[in-house]
Amino acid sequence: MTRYSKRNTVSRRRFLSATILAGAMLPFAAACGKKENAGQLPDVTTSPSDCRDLSGVSAEDLAIREKLAYVNESPIPENECSNCNLYLPPTDERKCGGCMLFKGPVEAKGYCTYWAPKIEG
Image (cartoon, rainbow, N blue to C red; front, side, top):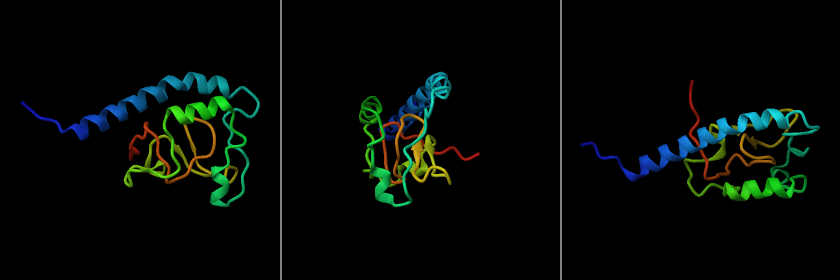
């Protein structure tokens, strides 16, 4: 009989939960893309402190962030948004990172309960 450590079981469970949730949200993401400015992060400058400005995020979207327990600094150093499969890195148009699960700016060093390891391919 093979014994699995609790740590591996939790990580696998989180990964599967995040993958299933992301897949389930795809139809909604497609529908939201039809709305004006849907899925866009607030326009911010390159200053890192501006990436914590949530003034352009709706109360509903803030509730989603809270439900996913998003924090700006990860309590687990090896699990950060920057190495999460759901992280959207900054671009020329969007100076802050983002996430596939919720709207608003995301810190590269942030974390939420749906953190899923980046899949190298």
